[in-house]
Image 1 (cartoon, rainbow, N blue to C red):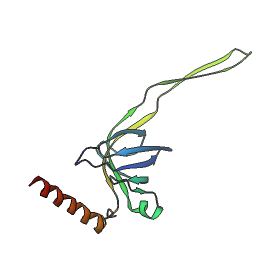
Image 2 (image 1 turned 90 degrees about the horizontal axis):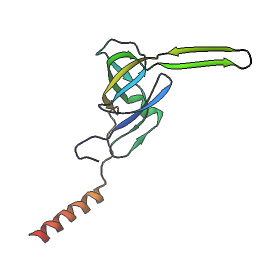
Image 3 (image 1 turned 180 degrees about the horizontal axis):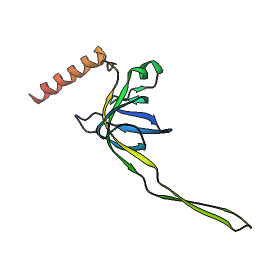
Image 4 (image 1 turned 60 degrees about the vertical axis):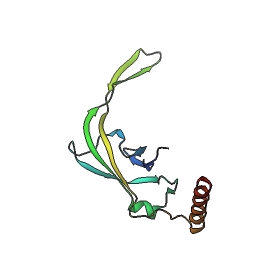
Length: 138
């Protein structure tokens, strides 16, 4: 884990699929309305912040939002669908390309929920440890 970097991620649902996203991620989802550059709000199913606290309660998730902007609309790779019926020489090949929207995750808002404060006992022990280290060095 890098210092100074936020490790908040969310699991969102769109197009019948679930995606794990972090701020700055580019994801391809099934086609959504909106022009290029438009901002969308997605409702998360699960939010985990950088302290490792998992938020999955419905009341807390109602306040949380994931904001993403539309980068572009494009089509996915072509897949081939081959169907046949045996003993009758019926064969059929069909191609399909899914319309996709590329999103860039701009922000994950926890809905004003404050992070848990450190206990005062833990803070005191950390201060004492720092003082002891300074005394040993000096």
